[in-house]
Image 1 (tube, rainbow, N blue to C red):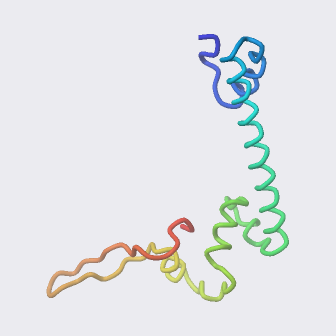
Image 2: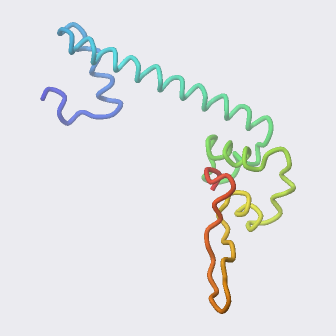
Image 3: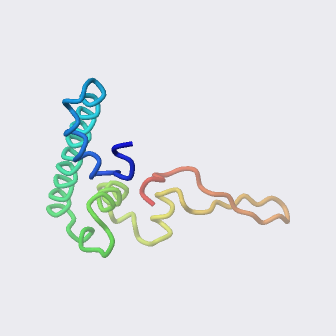
Length: 121
């Protein structure tokens, strides 16, 4: 009840203060320490990704709304041959987001492509 209404990063800042209050306090303090370590590691990785992108493909980071993680996904999808991305349709095909004809006789229909890198969309 003491921590009701406190959530997210603020809760993780408060939890280490209860470390001296028995086993539960020690467990909650350890949990807060693990959370802080994971957050710091994630920020370090994001900085490393951003530095690599600034060196290799700064145009992706210059795009509005494209941060380091999104730019890295796009760079991985393009791979070593960005020339294969000639249009939006070719990018949709690489990502598996393009429709595939599934017609039979007089019935005209399409289904979603299940191949490709779905995470790149």
